[in-house]
Amino acid sequence: MDNLILKISAVIILISLMIALVRFIKGPGSVSRVVAFDVMGYFAISLIALAALFSDRMIYLDASLIYGLLAFIEVVIFARYIERGL
Image 1 (cartoon, rainbow, N blue to C red):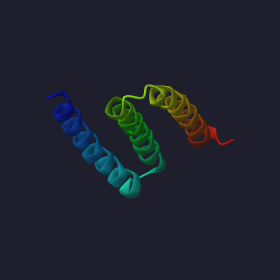
Image 2 (spheres, rainbow, N blue to C red; image 1 turned 90 degrees about the vertical axis):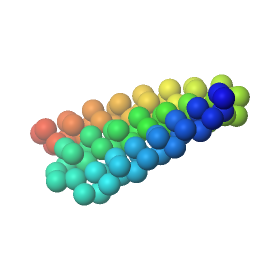
Image 3 (spheres, rainbow, N blue to C red; image 1 turned 180 degrees about the vertical axis):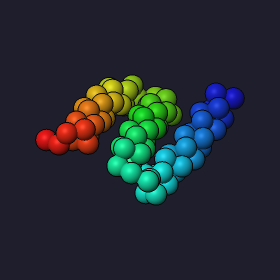
Image 4 (tube, one colour; image 1 turned 45 degrees about the vertical axis):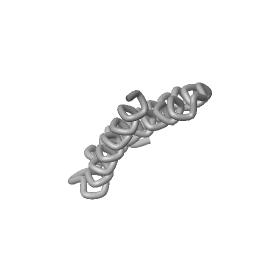
């Protein structure tokens, strides 16, 4: 039962990732693309966490934490660039 729930959640996350990818490609402006890129990063973090649960290796959780920190820094840099340039 546990494995089935993890597989269903992985499918839902992948579908959501594809929707965010469409928004990233077709976004009306740069702000929409940055938000879609950020959302895709959060979905990637979720998939890495699910991979940790599937493989029973908790080192992947550390990788997802580092990826989350880098995604946050990336969004701050893009927001600063959009607001006034570097």
